Image (cartoon, rainbow, N blue to C red; front, side, top):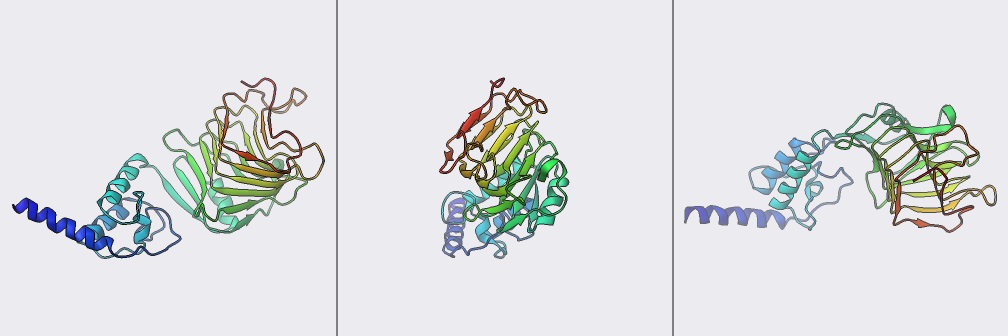
Length: 283
């Protein structure tokens, strides 16, 4: 009887807590205490709030991690699982171009670079035609993630001109680009000598030549659920939507771009050349 009474009280507390409406905050998922990162401190804060032993955290709706519209013990369980699954994750919040350049230059395995809403227009020198560039290696357990904070209003990464330069270049292994818009460059996203990199739910548009190019011995990569349009807008018949490998007339890049996967993408309208061009030497 005592145990039933305790369970009844707990259920009443949880039910009462869930009656409070969730407020709208543009914050990092899981960051209920509002310190800009997702950590065990958020689990403590959420648990105390839901179970009735703590105050309402700063961003309670960020703790709604279970797919429903209320805060309860299921969110505590989901949060705990995600913390255990990704113990090495380091959230790096970015709000402007210089912060993005710094985050990319200092990136390491386990970093999750989160872009606030807005447009990031490159400025400064462009070595080898690259603007925003990621060179570090992630790992299978701890990839390096670059994503928008709000997928409903994706952050825009912009180059400098349609005639020159690449908007984003990835040179390391195990990267994930998610929920981004990429525009205003000769080439949109270039993946060079990078393995196991994923490009998911990105929109690439208004480029002088290619939209996305997996190049220079980049293998086991994924391009999924991307929207690619208005590509190759400068010269008729030039500008592939997604380009894999290099032609045999090209000598400066490695040809082995093997076992890459393209799925669920919308390509077009206004693509200057092939929608998908898979070159010789690839598997």
